[in-house]
Length: 443
Image (cartoon, rainbow, N blue to C red; front, top):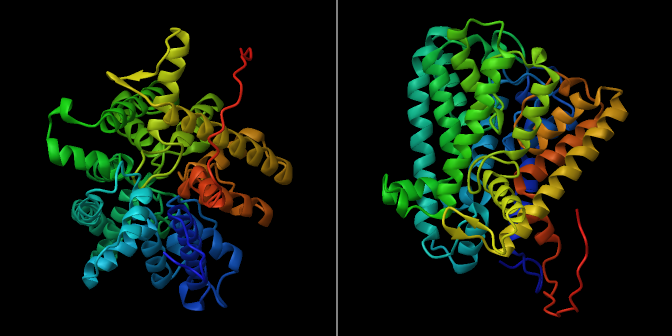
């Protein structure tokens, strides 16, 4: 793709700039007077924060979505969530499909990087599957949510609420309209509603495990041995990352509830914890050890090629098996009967270091600026960087500087730190010089 003169944008630059353009467009639309119920419109920083949170499918808000934004503003937020969740490139390709245009090699390359596909071949078929699968899942979710939403809010509003929450859940965005009852209440009113909880959890899981996994399931059905290593890793890691916090919530954090009443909230909080941002319990009563556990899980996030952000499940899995390899004094990194390449190990280590530095430095900065407890601020920065959207209630009271920090973290968490680094370093030649080898003692 050409820009001005001989300047050519790389796939990474197109992805990075595409998200920025959509965020700015969303902020401008939300700043229009008809987007909010407030007289005279909304300040640009609040609009920018909301647009970034929607495009980056985070869910952190400084204004309650239901009570502050008008129906037009809510529609803008929903469109931003849909495009941001599916990806800028995927949304552009869907328009190309509808117009009947052919997809060139450059566009296919950008599509590959956008959805973390292993190869360019078959990328158009995979993208078409993504688009149709996403809309089918969201439509099914809306139908399943319809009875509960109509029962709670009436027919017209119930239909809108069912569609909004289905899209928000599948895209792992965490935006809700429950502020019509009580501002910033999320789904606490439906804590024991089995249809709502199960539907939202299924939508979150479907969007969070990634379309590459769903393509494997569609192609090979339940033949586990035929799945890619990527799919096996995502499914096993996701299962562990759901089971562990669910047990923690059940036994340690929800003891004020009867055992029979803990099961659904514990499972829901576990599923939504890593990336979706909905909640059915008050996190203000969670212990400090529980908050620390939640911070780690939020930083992990979803899986590559999904609607979720964070470090990704596969990154954590590669880091874990790499550590086991070192402990066992083995030469090569193995996982599920396959060898892991050195490039994947290096990328995983780089991502971990990048997320750790951003999360800690940003949390410390906000704690210093706002004079708030460090753990509370680290919870907020982990939520932003992991594009989760859970909060301990401080988002709306933060100063402009702290909000800008969260805006940057949400953007980095959705686009990906490595994508931005590769975008900034495009055009630089890869050095193949080999320097003398010398050992260094670590540990």
